[in-house]
Length: 400
Image 1 (cartoon, helix red, strand yellow):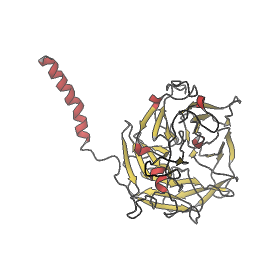
Image 2: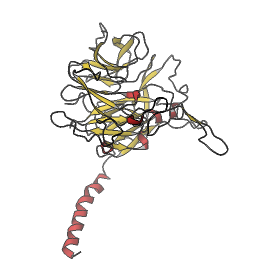
Image 3: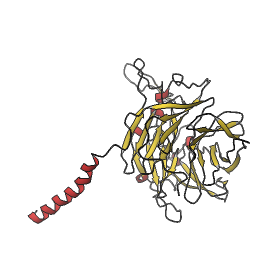
Image 4: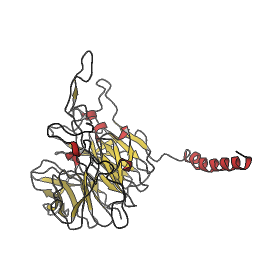
């Protein structure tokens, strides 16, 4: 290498290194070892969480008769009923559209109502034929997107304005756009046996029998097949999907006409519309059990990692940081006493970060009877908020 070339290389290195060194002196973007306090407890289990521009949070009680839709003011938290879902009901994802209507995923359906504290309305069916409907998000054209949750097939649907029927035989306003590859290959599925792939287990509820010669003499239950959970759009129109089982975030990209650009069909043992593995935006052990996701204005993805009783953030360039995780009990070494108790859905309301807690009896939150909410009640769910303010505000929803 001659002197001129060497000088050019060194100059380029200085240009690249300069901003990196300067960044080290910048204040941290995210709190470290953040503290959480209970905003309010609920008599029913909750999962989904969203908010409005007036400083209110919204969630839905599960297993009620009917299931109440609650509005909770951050400034003075009380449970105000602003709608109802007809029993039997077990709502999960929840999101507003631009018109102020509230949408809720419930079983095979997506429901909708316009919140009203004076005369709480009953939700009506907006979309059907979406088994396991879970996280909800709107795109810039007013389409509603959802994944198939605990069914484990990884289907992601787009429901056009006005709703529709996503049953495959129907030609309607609702279509399956792509799939997150499931853990078991679909072509090889055998009844009672399963397909070729892997089986992510969570302990508990799974168990391992320890013998003098092996820790794996028996490994029962606890399967975690959920690969299409929380969904969220960024300003560029990319859709991020939380993969609970893999501890990953997938990124799906679209053209200006809304057509999927991300590669599919790389593995013939999956459905033809299954995303290729290069569409994984990030995979990290911190993200194991990631449930709901929410974005801030800088494009950082905030995760409620339910199975780890943790809050994790992924930066726009794919770096992963743990913001908070329960401290283990000094005697039991379990992390099930709170303040987080199976955090499910995060929401960024201005500079405030809050998450629902559904108290699932899995992994770090098991047994789920140790915290301030318990399966037998009287309090079965709660909303927890971070004591520290966000440095970067939440992304206003829906994204335009």
